[in-house]
Structure formats: structure tokens, C-alpha cells
Length: 153
Image 1 (cartoon, rainbow, N blue to C red):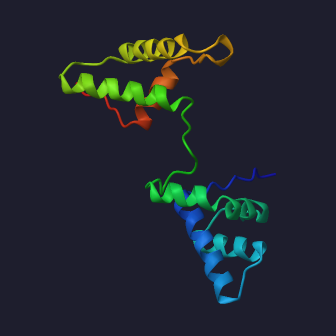
Image 2: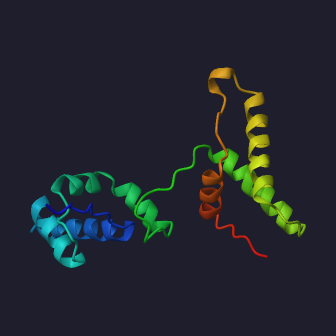
């Protein structure tokens, strides 16, 4: 038996499906979710038809989809989440300050600074509310990818 592949749509495709759904509703010839799934399948030549329940979720997530398209995340298939936005912003600002001074920033230094920022943020919080993040090599890789930092020699 063949394994069925999951269909992952980009934000742009989700947006286009929503636009088609809205266009059909406004013209009075609204699609059922099954018809919309069939339309998406033929338009994007998907290996497997999108489930109608998935389309219901898309319609409910219209503002999220619109936001991602407006921010230029057209070819992404899912959100990239940040556990603590203020920590990430502080680290990015620190790195840019260091770059402006033409100083090399190693991976270990980035991880150490992230730990320092976390401990400074935890200083003012009660024990239950403190951050307990691990700054592993995987975290570092994703952080650099999210913020478009590249290593040059």
C-alpha cells in the first residue's frame, strides 16, 4: 500500500484559495468545501486532494494568512515561532551593535550572550515565571536562519 503524502500549502497558495472562495461567494456561485478542494487540486496539481476540513480551518484563519502574505512570507508553509520575542530582539540588537564595531561574533559567543540576557530577564521574575530556555546548536541554527545571519570568512 502506498503511503499518502501530506499536502502542505504555502501562505501564498492558502491566500489564493481564500481569494477564490471569497470571489465565488461575492458572485453568488459559492463553492462547497469539496468543490473548493477540487478547484485547489486542479489549480496547484496537488498529489492529494486537500481535505474539506482543512479548508474550513483556512477560512477561519483568514487574518493570520493575510498577515503572513502582507509580511512577505509567501513561500513559507508554516509560522516560525519565537519562544521569547524580547529576548530574541535584545540578542539581535546586541549582535548588530557588535557587527557595527567590525568585531567577529562566534556561535559560542551568541549562545553565551543569549544565556546572559535570559538570566538578566529572570532576575526580576518570580521562580514560577522565569525563563528556562536551552540555547543549543539547533536553537542557534534556527535563530541565525530566522534573522538571516550568515557566517563569512
